[in-house]
Amino acid sequence: MTRDEDRSRIKIAVQKSGRLTDHSLDLLARCGLKYTKGRDQLICYGENLPIDVLLVRDDDVPGLVRDDVCDLGIVGMNVIEERRLDFAAAGDDAPFTHVRDLDFGHCRLCLAVPEQMDWNGAGDLAGRRIATSYPHIVADYLARHGLDAEVVEFSGAVEIAPRLGKADVICDLVSTGGTLRANHLREVETVLESVAALIQTPKPVSAAKAEWIERLKQRIEGVIQVSESKYIMLHAPRSALAAITRLLPGSEAPTVMPLEGRDDKVAIHAVCRENVFWETLEDLKRAGASSMLVLPVEKMMY
Ligand code: ATP
Ligand code: ZN
Image (tube, rainbow, N blue to C red):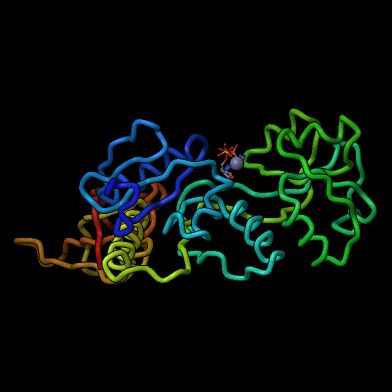
């Protein structure tokens, strides 16, 4: 039996080449997965864990998870939502399970109009032609707003549709807005806030596989928490203990320790579940803290 056929190994679908690729592979590496790339460059075989990574187009990820070719997948919510509506229209209401949002791939699916066009709200879409690569999401948006408009499907370069006379409005992904400005378009409404997410097949899996899926999910949880966490150490006057503890961002129960030979001061150690910015340190100093040290957290498990 080759590794491809081994049904006891977990397969996770990830974008082969694009904006999500490096982040996805980095996340799996930080979960402890070491892999070698197959000769066809389509599969990365896990060396130390029973987990293989399938490298595919992002649009194919939801279908592979739905059809149980892959147990897990990483893909943007924009693609997940578009495919979910597509499957629902075909009668499949539970094609995959959304496990959790990840901490990369942030963007938004927006309506944009030519700079000179008046815009008074979603009602202005009535009777217009909307160019998009997300026909199901746009149709759903129109239905929710009780609007009748024509959806023109474009597979790429949606932003040039108005100039080509193919549409009046576009609905496309935006992160900074630079592409829109370069094409003399103005963002007017957000249809969907998107981020990369982990999805899972709803089909039952063997107990051994289920255990590894659970372990991987827990490690992902830990990696994401760690990237947002810092360990902070500082000295504080006993009298300012309450005020200083309140200033520590996202920390539940700090450790308070005596300082040798000092009755008026203590050392505080705490895990902050949010980033610690210079402004926070300045606020802590004003409240009486000194000798502050902020350290990255490498691993975390609760
Ligand atoms: P593929 O060849 O895999 O189909 P693609 O061209 O559809 O690639 P990319 O441009 O690599 O996809 O984007 C992948 C995902 O990254 C998007 O679906 C979206 O979730 C996310 N993303 C984050 N920021 C942006 C952005 N500014 N523009 C487009 N997508 C973005
Ligand atoms: Zn794509």
